[in-house]
Image 1 (cartoon, rainbow, N blue to C red):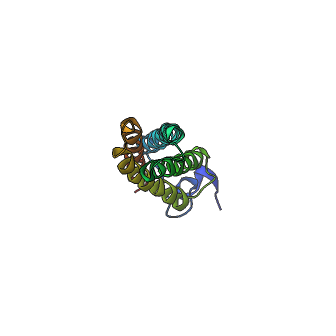
Image 2: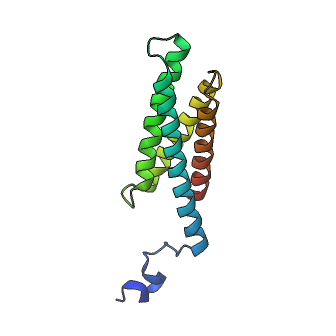
Image 3: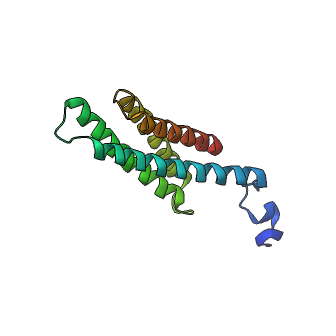
Length: 138
């Protein structure tokens, strides 16, 4: 029985095909872009949450909580994306989808808070990067 790259299917298990270089580059680029957008969003959300008075009005408390949650989810997503082969595809997909959803919800909350426009845009940019990466996985 031949093994390695001389084996049938190029050394891959039956049913697994070789990915083209272009697909691999796109996957890596989208993964990096998503991780980078997550980092930028986490930073913006943490900063925004820190600027809100913890004893402020109900709207301010919502902004603060969403900012903290979004920062934590984005940070966790960046860590998952940065770990080489530590998480399986289903775990990565679930984490990135969760991040996308939290970012969209957070952006809506930040839209209603004066001075949080840049934070809302960072959340939307992260959601777009998550969507692009999820499309790469499909």
